[in-house]
Amino acid sequence: MSADLHDPRPAAAERAGGDDRAFPRLLPWVLTVAGGLGLLSALDLSYERLLLATDPDYRPSCSFNPLLDCGAVASSDQASAFGDFPNTLLGVAAFAVVVTLGVLALLGVRLPRPVRLGLQVGVLVGFAFVQWLVHVSVFQLGVLCPYCMVVWVCTVTLFSYVTLANAADGVLGARLARSPLVRTLVIAHPVPVVLWVAAVAALVGVVFADQWALML
Image: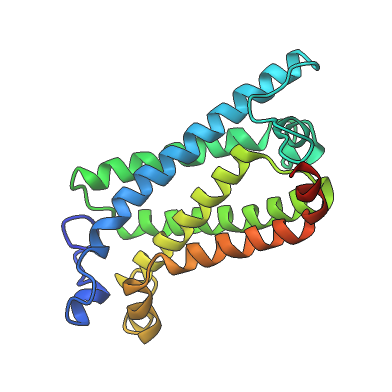
């Protein structure tokens, strides 16, 4: 990333001769846009869950059919994985922090290394949690939540770009910043997210093939 946005270290792309000079400007936008979309989705899910708790007959706006049903997911035990409060509240808090950091970076504030390391831990935990949520939705509940899937993609996008940015800037170590893999991914930065989305789409397509056929 560039010195005016983050740590005053040369980005991997610049050290490699400027293979992708646009990449250093992407992270603040990714934090703001992906964080914002995730925040809006988490807020809506929290609201829908509240309405569902007060009225068992309420049909959430993101419940379209037996397969795409936010209500079934929101009322499951797994929707409150950490106790009596819903997972969506964790999402609201986490995405709010991400958006704040993104806006600060867009305004030219340098994010110190401890902040970037803290963000790295946060997105790593979020990424791992999303993998668990995918497993629960596909293999345990057998139901998909459209807004949840927006949160999944936003979280994976944040994990991919934050990790690559930290690696390219030397936040995760100078040796990693010099690696050919990091320099390649700086150029092909959308690829990890695209591959993850394609893999999950293929998984959903195969596991729910019969349900898709019935709906079509």
